[in-house]
Structure formats: structure tokens, C-alpha cells
Length: 275
Ligand SMILES: [Mn+2]
Image (tube, rainbow, N blue to C red; front, side, top):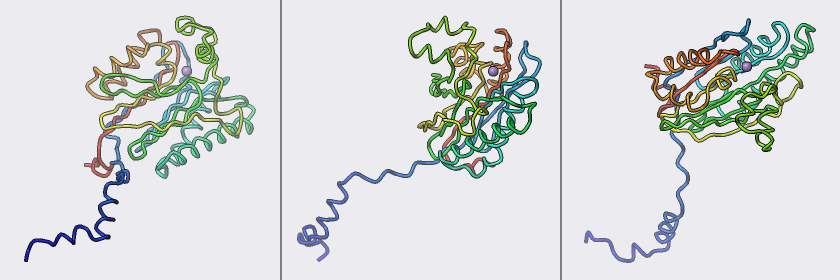
């Protein structure tokens, strides 16, 4: 006989098996995303003597820092912060790793400010992103920003830690007033003042095709989000986008240092794109 007996479908073990199969499946491990394109540019702008911004681009970690302080202190603060991240970037795989590195960066900036009177009181913003699995992990302090462009729509994923944005959130200012407010570049959270920083952390769902942009306020102070969206959407490559963002920010006045870091995600393990 080749046909199975009816009893084989009703024996207890089989019933148990079927019941198990109707339970929700375990979440399938997400396909990893990898960085398939990246670009970064920093420009002094038209009004400042020095460029106090720094940036960092690694295999799956990215950061922008905008330093403040007298003399060369701002430059030192931002570069100390991104170097601390760079050193550990290859060993960072998840949100905790990014957070740990960001705290280390904060400690390094603070220590340098204490050790050398020339750098006393220096501070810097830090916006950092780590591609981890199918997510982008973020650790952020200050008024540099992270955006995601998906399907032609640009979305800001960070809140500015600044007096003006705080007043804006509390309804004390309009967008128009905020844009020209004399205190608009005063930040309420930064690396340098304390050994530890209360970083804003986010875990962002990401997908192949997403473009992420990290930038300093020298870009966002000069260009409205709509214009950034158009420039990045219409660019032929991320290098092209970076160049056009800097050019347009300078064309709009270039009042501050301008830094842009862009990366695009694709499906698949990073090893596949080495070719
Ligand atoms: Mn700035």
C-alpha cells in the first residue's frame, strides 16, 4: 500500500507538530544592509577663517562634528571627537558599541580641554551613525543633523540640541523667527563640557536604496530642507550631491563651515561589494 493510513495524520505527535506550525513564525533574521556608495566633503565657507568641522567615514560608521572654542580649539575639539570614533569603528557592530565610542569621544574632548589651557572650554557637536544589520543606529549631541532620503522624500532624524529649537518646540518662536534668531547657533548639548554626555540615541529602520546625510549647521543654516531634498534627489552620484550641497550653501551665503557626509545602502553583506 502506498497511500498513508488516516491514523498517521491524527497521531498525537503529528497534531502537536501542526499546532506548532500555526504559531507565529520566529522573526527571520534581517538581511544585512551594506554601504554601497559614500561621499564626504567639508568646506570653510565664505565668512570663516578656519574650518572647525570634522568628519569621519569608515566601512559602516559615519560622523560629523562641529567644534566651538577660541583660537584653534574648535578644530581640535571636533577632530579629537571623530578620531576617537575612527579608532574603534572597525570593532563597532551594534548600538551599544556606537554609544560606547561616542562616550569615549566625549571623554577625550573633555580631557584635552582640561589638560591644556589653550583648549579650555572647547566643545563640539557629534552626530554619528552606524549601519548594523537592517538598521542605522544613531548617537547624537548638538545641532549637526542626520537625514534620510527615501523615495525622493527627505526626513530629518535628529532633534537639534539648541536654545532656538527648544523654544521652537515649546511654541515660543515661529520657524521664520528661529531661522534668523541671534542665538540660533547656541547649542545646549555638546561634547567637552563634561566627561559624559547625554547622547540622543535612535535606532532607525533602514532599507536598500536609502540615502543618509549627516551635516553640520553650515548646510542647514543656509539651505531649507526642500532644497537639500531636491539637490540630493537630482544628483547623479553622492560625490555630485556633496559638491552641489557645498556649492549651494556657499551660493546662499556660506556663513559657516559646511560639512556633508552621505552614504547609500544596498542589500547584501559588505564582502559582496568589495569587487
Ligand atoms: Mn557650524
